[in-house]
Length: 189
Length: 384
Image 1 (cartoon, helix red, strand yellow):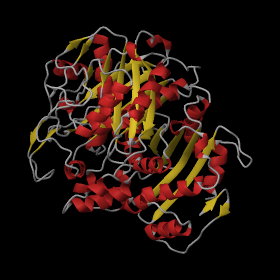
Image 2 (cartoon, one colour; image 1 turned 180 degrees about the vertical axis):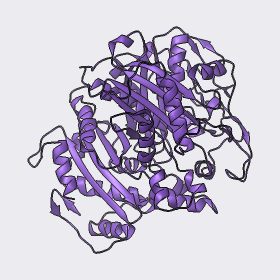
Image 3 (cartoon, rainbow over the protein chains, first blue to last red; image 1 turned 90 degrees about the horizontal axis):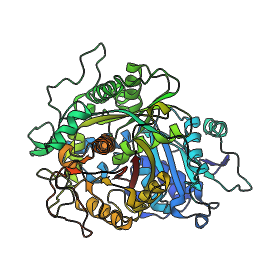
Image 4 (cartoon, rainbow over the protein chains, first blue to last red; image 1 turned 90 degrees about the vertical axis):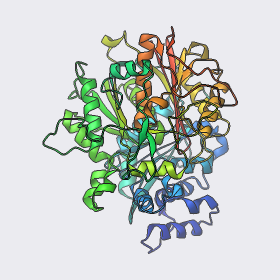
């Protein structure tokens, strides 16, 4: 796991749920709702926690001025397969609610009180150009002042999450928000 | 902090549309049936779906949606192909133009294949939404990669908003926006597990509202910035918000949907008094209807004529925002707003002006709203 190119945590664990729990413990997170999330939401939520920790000044923005644009390839299929198994006996409402990919956006919004624009797109592979266009529209038109965007993909043992925090206001360590820079970071992750 | 940027992109016009539902295969056929107060929701008994009888709006199982071709398209893909094909017919839109983009919305796509096929890697690839989108795109010969939106029950409305913005930004000139969902045991069992289904035709905003019906359907709307369509209805603005409250229950206050409505009106540069009618989400669950009523109250729209089409179509999930927007575009053109099937006496704490008959209107604008799991809300403004 890296942030801004610096490795923050590593572990030889391969099972996603076990690895995510070790990340959760390593960063001493305390959020009871985490434990009922499906793996896709855990992955996106944890990545957002690491992304925002230390350097995001939430109070700077109104809640409706912060948004989230995410994409992945497998939608919520990982949890769909688990939910479908329960329908053979007693369908589980707590699994059913996670059979939508945008629930991970809802979880990040609940945690951080983000109430702005959001959207979940499904694509074969991370399309940095499309993401840049979507976020630039919202930020340049002042619909959003800050936006989390990126890729949150998980299917059984395979997963990858790469999130970017985009702010109108330049910070000392900011780099230009561009498709090219996202592609470089995505490829190196 | 600056306000919303007032520099507008080009006007976005509605070129053509299609609604494909158990009520009919064209928008005109659907609109006619709504005017006659005919519902597609009825009781079904099918052990492949549920051990209990249930009310839903379903296509006839034996009905073939498109002619059998060389490739075995799934029902989901057939619905999209049929709807897009009908909308494109005679529209003059060139799908092979680099300036034309295809946008597809669905909540669950091919998920029903889990129930009939063996679970292996090829099935997983077949269920992935990009696989369906590619097949549909190739069927017509679109040259740009399709955009796919899967954002719960706002997917269809969000697809229209995404299309409007892609055109306003100048990236494309035409957008073909299609949505569909197929009902199977997977989806039905989930809503059953939530006790969210009504044991009758649903009753949006009625004092006896007791849950929703599910429905199958597809719809397509074609948008363009080409000035030759300048006499047509426009998509004038829209906005999305999140409740940040609960993943499966709506906001208690409706403030977040109200915020999306306010921003959509600002985007369209109109006020509440300019809105002649509202096409609400109106699922007929108590939580949804109360939340929406609060939002309309907060935005000064409590007296504006409002309908929900869920009593005719059920909740068509990823197609709902499209079907309901398209029917409302035709309401605007014909000056007739359909009645709200199932509504008799006001239910929510804040009473609304719910249509109980085919209402003549003379207006230039309507509002479409949608809300869904994950706390998502969207509002769209259409106008002449």
